[in-house]
Image (cartoon, rainbow, N blue to C red; front, side, top):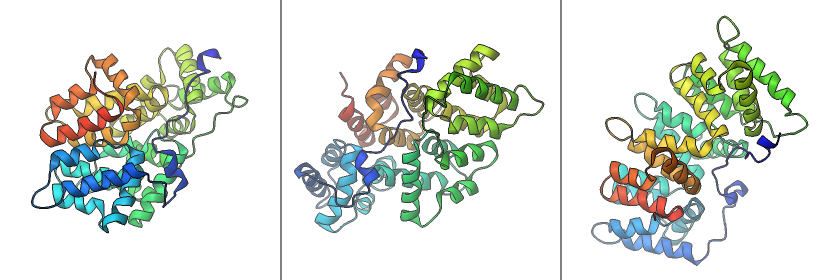
Length: 339
């Protein structure tokens, strides 16, 4: 069992203070200084984008949670409205509107964006909802309802179908089991690996719900054990099993969920690369990746360089231009400075 002894729990994305839901957090002088700098960059005729990017690009999610509150208190203006009015709804403007919110409110806005208009942005939707800690998911659902008076699960059900719906709805239940060494034993892992096999390869007509349930509900440490047992007994990994049994966006969502539990930093590095693959960059996905995973970027940047022999910063430079490029680079360099 030593091979599993140091495996992490499911990664939470939000600052600790967000879980406390404190509406009057300790701000500090630096938050007031950033608010003043944002105000100065937006005063008069025309916006000083360079100054604005230096101010907002130097922040973390914890900072932005406080800035969103403090700016309103200081100037009686909603920072989201200010960013939209000054920079519009293009790539730069949309990124700044996300950054004008707390991390959880930003994700709520990203979900709304994924569901807006004709057709759902399934990839953005499942990468936000899948592979999340129970605490993150509960706060996300509560905040979404508070902001939009709409039940997040009901929205997702209406926007998805097939096995994709099964993955994201299961994820929304926030029902991942807490790791218990007395329960999550090697015997339990062997039992679960057999259940997964019998629900898929071992039967005529697969049972995707059983596959999805095991992946979504198992804590990462246990899932690594199940993956080891499955590969040892049946000759290939759970990732391969999912590829065999599912298809389309449902397969992608299930693979993302599993990968976030097995190798989260490599998974996020690949997600950033996928936003830049093919003809044309998926700027919305890239923006959401950099903002959502900013606190994890020190680890993700290492994984990205190991996998692709290219820094995240270089990928941003290759794919983006102008003030939008400068903003994303500032956010990355804040937590993982380019050497």
